[in-house]
Amino acid sequence: MGETLDSLLAESRDRLKTAGIEGAALDARRLVSGLLGLSPAELMTRGRHPVSGADIARIRDAVRRRVAREPVYRILGEREFSGLTLKLSKETLEPRPDTETLVDCIIPHVRRISAQKGRCRIIDLGTGTGAICLALLASVLDARGLGTDISEDALATAQENAERNGLAERFDTLRSSWFGAVEGRFDVIVSNPPYIRSNVVDKLEPEVRFHDPAAALDGGDDGLDAYHAIALHAGRHLEAGGVIGLEIGFDQKQAVTALFVARGFCLLESAKDLGGNDRVLVFEQDAE
Ligand code: GLN
Image (cartoon, rainbow, N blue to C red; front, side, top):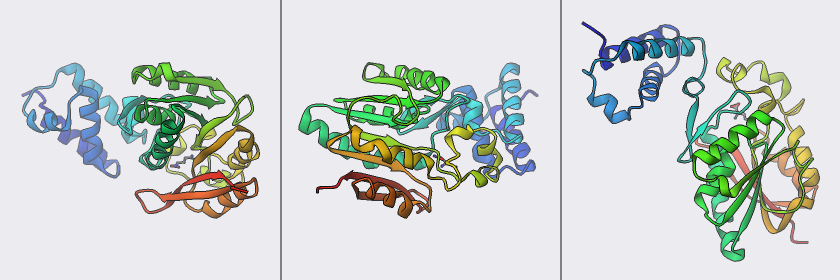
């Protein structure tokens, strides 16, 4: 008898489990449903459906890649983020649920500013897939966004993601290292910059170390290089009444706050990720 969806799912799960992949059953379901374009409900109800030879080959190949510790969404080539489907490429960080916390914190500010001014200009420094900026644009129709990155590959990916999600008319890209090539002022400055200490990057799990770009992870000796660069010029690029929203490492709240306070900002709010770690800081210009 040929393979059914159920037998392929079981085979995939067992191979992943034997290889020591944590969450083997979930990864098997994600790979199979992603590759075959089936919803979780369809996956459950179509267990006895036969699977074609070509699909069996694609699924087995994907399972081999996962066994070699390639992350599920790299294999599928795209990932959901804040309700958008985003294409990944080799020079973009895979968007993570932690970063949705930053989006959730900043949406009310984008709404408030849009309501006051009838528009809101957002800049996303080191935009990668465009995740943060595009999620904000999708939530607030009056907003416009600029995504910067040093990687051309990332900028092309962000642009493609803007098009795929119907946001291209309100999204531009610019090749820039932090504020290097940026002109003008913005109502909202957001970034998820690299913040891992250089000596820790090599110790990250293989899924991250070998598949996320080092340039999106490595924040220098103390992990704070990018925050220094951003804080240094943020004052020249923030509109009055605007905010700066940053993702940070779990132990960087004090250090990053100190950097921005020294440049004339004050901490407006902070938020923890789903794991309970400090993950997001929001600054505004000091009133004085
Ligand atoms: N949160 C990422 C990680 O998993 C790091 C992202 C970053 O440095 N901005 O390791």
